Image 1: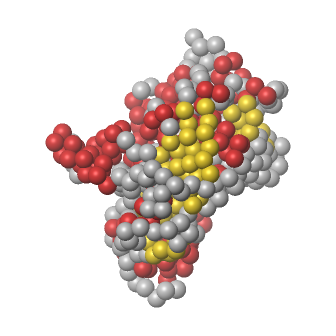
Image 2: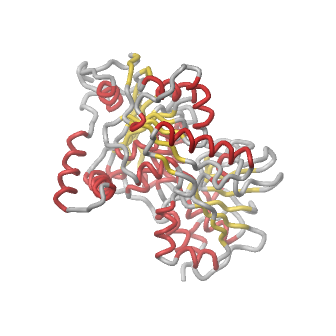
Length: 440
C-alpha cells in the first residue's frame, strides 16, 4: 500500500471537486457531470421551490426520464407526468426522455451522456449502474437532488473501496446475473455498504458491455456507494459511436477522435491503493443462482430448488431487460409455449431494445410462445405498475430486489434469477435450470 496511491473513488471525487487528490473518508463538495431523476422529479421540484430559486443551476447537466409508471396508470400519475413536462419546458432541460423511451440507467447509457471517469448522481438507488463504463455513479435522496438543481454541487464522503477479483471461464448458462447473486450471497447484503466496489479480472474483461451493466447495477444490492469496472476499448468505441450519432453523423475519423478523447479521460486505480478488503472468486465454480425470498443475499444454486411452482415469470428492469436478455429467452422459448398456469411478462429496458428485438423477429416468436410485452420502463419491479402480484403468488424475476411487498403485495414470494433461469422456469412451470430444457 502506497501513501500516495489512489483508488478509483478517490480519483473520481478529486476530479469532481477540483482537487489534485482526496483522502478516504474526506468530505468534498463535488459537482456532478450529470444528475438524473425520473417520475420522482415532481416531488424533487417541490423541495427545490423551497430554496426560492426560479432557475436550476445547470439545466444542461440534468437528465429526466419518465420510466417508473408508464404510460400513466392513474390520474395521479398522469398529473405527476404533466407537472414534470411543464418543468422540463420551463427550465429548458434538453435531456428529457418521455414515456416509452425506457429505464433511466439504460437510456442514459444508450445516449452516451456520461463518460468514463465522470460523476453521475441520481435520485435512484441503482445509479451505481454506470460503473460499467468506469463512471462514478451513486444514488442520492430527493432533498440532495434538489440541492444539486439549486447549486450544481453536493457534498460527498469519499468512500473506502472493496476490491473483487474475478477469474476463470463461465460455465454454460452462467451469466453476469449469476456472478452478481453469488457475490452478494457470499459477502452479504451489507458487504459493500458505503463502499466503492471495484471489480477486476479476466472474467470481467470477457463480459459483454450489457453483462457489465448487469454486474455494476447489482452492486447496489450489496449496499455499494458506487461500483467500478475497468473501462476498455469496447467501452470507448460504444460511447464514441453513440456520441457521434447524436450529432447526426457517423464519420469514422470523428468516431476515432471521440474514442481517443474518452480513453484520455478514463480513470484507473493506482497499484498499491488502499482497500478495505480484497476478495477473489473463480467464476468457473459458479452455477446458475437464485435469490430466495425475501433477501437478495439468500442465494442458492438453482438445482437446490425443487417443485416450486411459478405463477409469473418476469424478464426486464434496469438489471436484465437488455437485448442479450431477450435473446436468451428467445433461444429457450422459440417454437415452444410457456406452461399452463404460468404467465411470462417481458418488459424491454428501452425502446431501442424493443426495436432491435422486433427487427430480429424475437418479439413475434416470444408472443407465439405466450409472452406478454409491456411498454419499455420499470414495470412491476417496484410494485405499482404492469404486472404486480396477487397474494399467495410466486414470481421468478430477473429484477434486482425480492423484498417482501416489492411487487405489490407482502403476501407473494419473489425469486431472483438470470433471464435464462426465468425463461426456463416459465417454460416448465416451476423454478428450473435452463439445462433442463432440451434445445431444438
